[in-house]
Image (cartoon, rainbow over all chains, first blue to last red; front, side, top):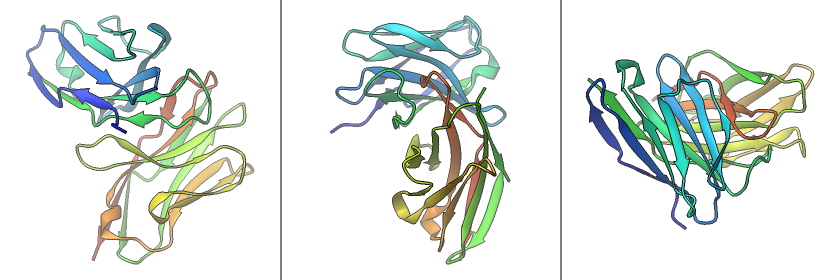
Length: 115
Length: 113
């Protein structure tokens, strides 16, 4: 079956703009999490959505937001972009909510560059 | 709160040599631990996971890891490195609510011929 699909793969934006990234989960997966990966901070958890509701949120400013649709696809939005938002944004999906030993399946990521 | 520490940001080995990537965890509850691998410009792929069923966990591509509670460690090993093993490796633990992965800083593995 198809894996986790993230679009677009690459994106260049200007400071102050906003951006929307998309994540389509594996069929049947209802939980979508987002992570930011930078050389300095490594992989950091942004938020998780399940059944169209944000269930958990990491320590990021309110400029970072997301949503989930009824088909489990998720989008994340970053407003008023800053140079420091340049990163690889990864989404990960699991079949259900929680589940400590559940494997998370990752997409290939969206590389965002802010200039 | 859970956390993981990966010792050594960069490990270099020769082809055919033993691979040892170190991970120590901190957790107030029984941890659920994972090792992921990331190739350049790619997402993360699960190598193996510890779920308390067995302390020695075998994963894909010949990797294995041993959970040692007394040492709070979950080190990743492979008896014989291949060139194709060159990548970045991440140790991770699930948070207590089971809703997020907490990652170590990663270890870049280089393999020379």
